[in-house]
Image 1 (cartoon, rainbow, N blue to C red):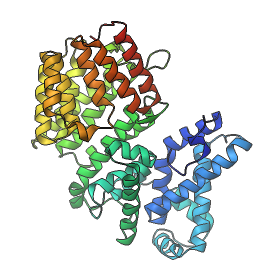
Image 2 (image 1 turned 90 degrees about the vertical axis):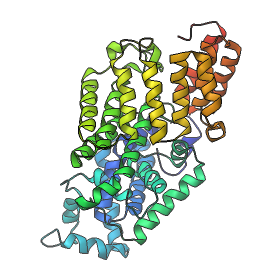
Image 3 (image 1 turned 180 degrees about the vertical axis):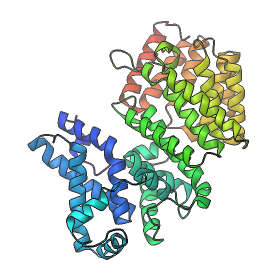
Length: 434
């Protein structure tokens, strides 16, 4: 949950605090987007939403959670927005904007409420394209939208970027200031400008999806509300730009990956790794939709891009009968293609794992040592986790256990920490790594 640090960050949260956090994660994007449309200022909208959150933290534990918590947050934020319009200089600009849309009495509270509640179009999609405005560098576009769209804390955004929390905070602050200074309107750009913002929009959607599919921090292994929102935004974007291969490629990637989500948690809520998942629980409808989106990406005739290549990798998993029968050679080859169009140490890390499964663990370890930039991934828990997996497959159990323990020490997700320590213990006991 984004927002100011509270004692909830340092002590186990109460049931009320957990409920507030759940509501915030689900509703913050729509709340901020609706407020941004009426204020014309993404930064001001986030501040109003944060004010409503603080009010909830103060009142709900004493008065109880309201029957419609999302509506309570919106009403509180709207009331503060209306009061703020009357006190601040932004009032004149906001009323002027409303005057073009409302027939009369624009300063009436009911009319302002009606304007805020006008859901013509999609406010969250407008927020996405506004935050991805060309006046912002790519890194700031993604950081701002992850903050406003996904409700991530600054440290979580830093984790997603493999950067420090302070730098992530600077990017967010500078992005808000740049939008304000350049008087960027909260609206979808003209159709001829949509394509130039597409790369930033797709990157944001992808990072939101990843945060939902495998949370970087907290007690939850997955955050379904984020994966669902990313899928919704991806589909909207692909419909908006049907001729762009990467828009369809990203939808395909998310559909095929999300299909595994029902099998990623065991009956007791503990994480289940890909090799251990019951594929009968995979969502066949999402797999069919994902394969169809992959076909649409290919039918555009555009050059292959990173999301389409990753979707092809996900299709290999989705169409395999089991883990051992997966076409790991093709996956390794696709990762090599991906490294060419989207160079990244994480891509090389995944490629090394695929090589290890296709050609044997020692080959994977050699690829890891030769191609993965370890310093760039110094705080990335998946580096020692992959190394541990390959070492275990090579029968080097003591070294493998050390790597899993190292990975557990790096992760900030409690469920992942338990999983990694469990793998270290199982390897020590001689379990088959598959």
